[in-house]
Image (tube, rainbow, N blue to C red; front, side, top):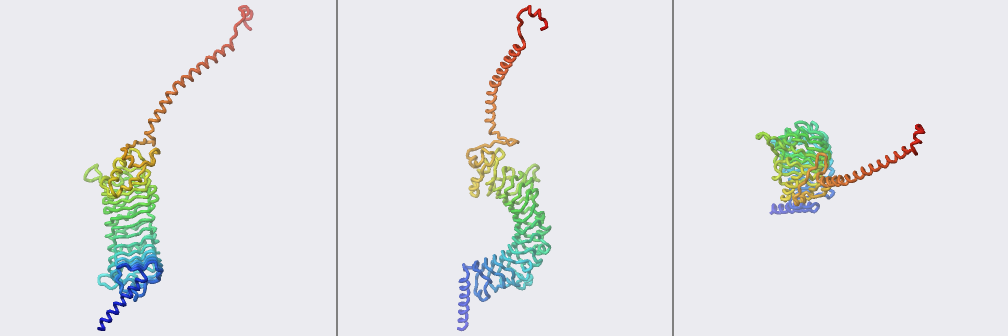
Length: 469
């Protein structure tokens, strides 16, 4: 009986404690949301008694010092947008089920973020591991380097976010730290002011599939990308690259994003033809991009001399660039695309772009994913076609004429020839009239001249008498 009473009291206490947590925070089944309530700590150990929540959020609070958590069943823990500058050793040791930890948008420095913070329980196969931790997000802190042994307690880590930290370079100890993550699959180094990647950085993490290098200072795609083994997704948006002459050889790459590049002007001949597995190409909002060479993706077929092969692209976005022309030979299978977006470009509506009218736009109108994008494909040049919808030209079965090498407009030739003919017809009688008037003027002038210098004598006698007047 005494045991039963004790159990009932304990259960009642646990229920009361959890109800107290839900009074302070928002409880939604397995999620405990303690965000935006101006907390300065994450409660006392006794406050957590009986908690069964597996997802816990302490975002947007005023926590400065993060103390060790008690034993909890939590799998996802988010403590972002606080003011954390210190984390106690073994802070997450009792969170044995923890798979995802987000410490982004705090004030953590390289000096404070040390390996002991992530110390776990003893295990014979690993060094005091957080054995289930797969995702670690350290975005937007004050990290300029990483301790070489920072990840020694995370043997299963797969996803690491270091974006928006002032790294600037990958120094030796940072490189040691990153290459120590044996099973790393996704790495985010965006917005870290990087200008280059050191050689062999990507060689050791053999399972790396996703890499984000966006919003950095690369002036060309890093050559060390070729050191990766199975990279499938690469984001290199918003970098000051001007021309892409040759993209690194990434035979397993399936998704490439290179948008929002303020200086990108051209993608050159055969620049991307080593991306033989590419399926999705996102290249939009590049305000200076005016040329993508027709052979940018094509590769000479070894098995068939003179033949060409293209990557199996299914999605391509080229919207909001400065493209006037798009070559049909850029891809070998436009009819097999799932998504294509070329709207909001200054298209030149002449014969070299006729295939846009007769082939591409009709195809886009049949795809549910691209129907709404057709309206944004509009002529920008020649002047007399500015603002006309390419889809409307298709509906009218319009055949665009060619501009010559000097950018003249043959569609205006008829008017010009008629003008010349009228000018010739009017010029002939006018010329004749002027000529006749001129001849008459000459005759009148000559007659006046002779009368002025010739005077008839009065008589023969006067002439003889005065032979030398």
